[in-house]
Amino acid sequence: MGSLWAGVDVGKTHHHVCVIDDDGTVVMSEKIPNDQQSISDIAGRLGKRRKPLRWAVDLRGGPASLLLAVLFERGADVRYVSGTVTSRMAEAFHGERKTDAHDAYVIAQTLRMRGDLPTLTLADGVQQQLKLLVSRRLDLVADRVRITARIQDLLTMISPALEKALHLRSRGALRLLVQWQTPAGLRRAGEARILAYLRQHGVWAAKALTAKVLTAARTQTVAVAGEATAAGIVGQMAIDLEAVNDRITAIEETIAAVVAEHAGLAPISRDSGRRQGHQVRPHRYHRGLRRVFSMSSFTALTHCPRSRAYYDKKRAEGKTHRQATAALSRQRLNVLWACIRDKTPYQPKQPRSGELAPCELA
Image (tube, rainbow, N blue to C red; front, side):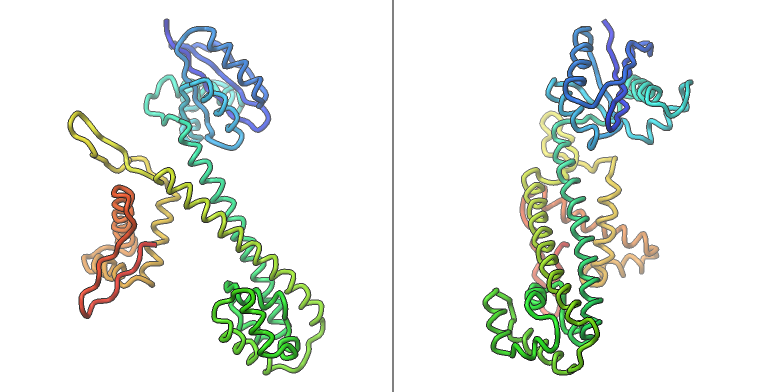
């Protein structure tokens, strides 16, 4: 009976679908709009041929989201062909390069010839969800950095001493700037009023913050040009920065909930017969995650005495900086893997008398 192999070159407004048979002969090559009806129509037509059908796409999200949703709803077997694989495989086939029809043809041929392509499932929606959440968080963090830098510039213009006294990552500092932005305004408000305002808004260490800003305010009695306008802008931007911080906190909580619900990243199971619970590292790896662990290890060298000691041990063994950092990343990953496997939070060992307290995994 034979099988059919459908390759899809995904596009924003249109997809190009190329279907070949077991001999590699083109059965269909068609451009379709990126809408549910068109995708369902071509999937239905191919289904009427009553032959085993396998699909392959070159994207896993974005413009391919609707296509994948329709195919999954129909119970289709969908594989992923990366852009790198498509580019390399294209050299084996004749035809005009970099056209949608040719790319779809190459994807279909790759699907027919290679059995090691990763399978896409509904579970990949979790990865897409996390990718969207992390991307949104990065946008918000960029907004926070931009707003913070602008507030610092304006505060330096108004009062360098006040800018030094306020740490803008502190909720108390932002609450203060919403109400008062100049040395003269702080002096007029006085200690009692400022302290009452901060405590009313639940600011921790309100008394220490009040004393710090009043000390800075008393060092400058001269008003600079444009102070009133700059103060108004600072007050507005402090409100904006509070809102951005709240959004970042909320999205971080959502990310944590998604990871907790789906157990995060898990090793590959190699169960066989009576042998159960045997798990190994996957050969494929996520370069972004590797970068995360590398940066985590690099930061731990400064803030974690035990991580630093392990790094120094590897350097003493003749390892290069990069090799020692990679070894430290591996150790930290082992701890995280154990936490996921045992479904228990990280519990550092209690230091013995005279030892440094261990750091937390982060």
